[in-house]
Length: 159
Image (tube, rainbow, N blue to C red; front, side, top):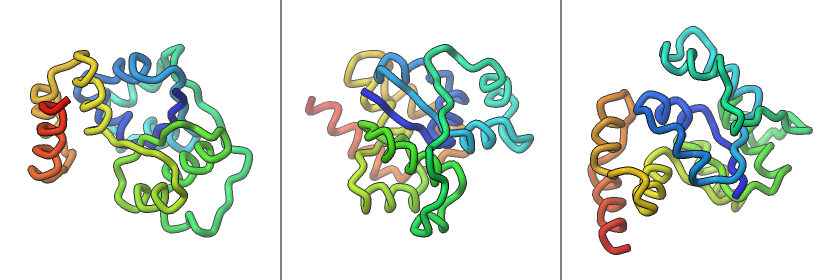
């Protein structure tokens, strides 16, 4: 399965020590150059900057062939390039947390998930304990409603 990741899921998975879930869940993980730049900027947490400075072999930085699409102007550079690259590669999924980014991938009918979805998929494969991972995630500045988390927790109990 090929996934293209936006900045937020990479950032938060690094912060909670669960980034190695990505190569366990997906056969190819790509980020566009804009995501790489966002992860290396000074405003990014030190742990994230340290991690991106030594790219793992399983992560590929790849630029989309085209950079412009006026319908994406309202998005950040990372979301814009991730969506364009996902379309170009016919990726199986985009990893995106941003609400506007999610709206756009829904409009374009591109399958997606976010940080919580990655954690849920990993928990479903018994790679992690969902509640422990969510507790670590919520100690960062990540925001999700209790309702969303409970809905995911319930779906895991039913599977």
